[in-house]
Amino acid sequence: METPDFTRFSQAHRVYAESLFAKIRALSASPAPNRGVTRFGYSEVEDRVLDALEEEGRALGLETSRDAAGNLLMRLPGRDRTLPGLFCGSHADSVLDGGNFDGLAGITAALLVVRDLQARGVTPARDIVVTALRCEEQGLIGSRAMMGKLSEADLGRRWTPDSPTLAERLTAQGYDVARLSSGTPVVDPKSIAAFLELHIEQGVRLTQPNGPRVGLVTGIRGMVYHRMIHCWGEPAHAGAIDFPFRHDALAATTRLVAGAWERWSQRVAKGEDLVFTTGILETDPTAIFNKVPEHVRFSLDARSLSAETREGFIEEFYEDAKRLEAFHGVRFEFDPAGRNEPMESDPALLAKLEEGAALLGIPVIHEPSGAGHDAQTFGLEKIPFAMVFIANANGSHNPDEAVETDDFLAGAAVLTEAVRLYTA
Image (cartoon, rainbow, N blue to C red):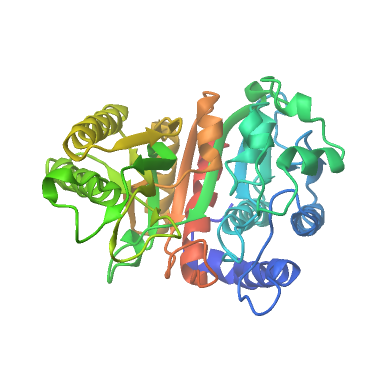
């Protein structure tokens, strides 16, 4: 067996990777004038993409199958097939007019793992399962369906206002909705030894000048969120109502958000892990410049690797809301809070990734993931997981995702060595 050599790895797989990225882009290009790709979960486009990926797997001699949720599983047989398999992959779908690499990079990297081990004459101790998951972008749907964990809210979701619900999509394609929401996995979690996922970085750490271009994920931040919060005040003439008599919904809301921002900065200054976002802030369409706003809608998204930090932050937010209700004479109405628990990467898997990077001479950094990933679903089933990030300019969820092939190959090489070490 050849020793780890990134130059060899790059030369062996560059053309294959670039051609596969181009092939899937062509299959899922957004209609003009959009510039990105659109492969919604459980759509005809996602079906075509999965079929194309299955062709790649079969060309490599992999045993291919679909689980009861439609996820694509492609197995490289190991020496002992009674052992749980090592699952490795990511998701096949995208957001509306998104980038080509979010999800696809992880599946392509898993195919390179198999391709490289085969070229080196390595037969793993256990099966390696290249995993192409469905519909991650709408709430980790494919992986959660694998675990039988779809909810009524999931089944009622529409990707666009005029599109079918998820339940309608699944039923039309012959899937058993009741089974996917039964709480019973359709793939036995005990058959999965661990889950490894390569993904584009959705932040900026790896794009800093002269820094490492590959990251090892320490964990996935848990989140608490409100999709929509309402603040109700009283409408009034802007020039006629003096300070003591105003019930200004916008003033109360902006003070609440500004206070949360200040507490965020204080917690970060103390070394706590936390991010906070208000992505929606809007008055009614009837709002005008000389009228005191009666109604404001806004959102909240707070994430941390620490459940204690997350919960402390949100409780302070609620306390501030009560105080501002009393001061401004307004009323805040919160929709039910959504929560995802923080998940730590498996130390043993991280150690394999670190060892692989060291053998290849590829520098890495350790960083948290602020975005959710299918790896969380496996973690919730007590399945060990770890992730590799690769540098990605211009952000994610947009047509301008920009992954350099060298960075992708570096991350894929680290992943390959970790898989080799884990399955030795």
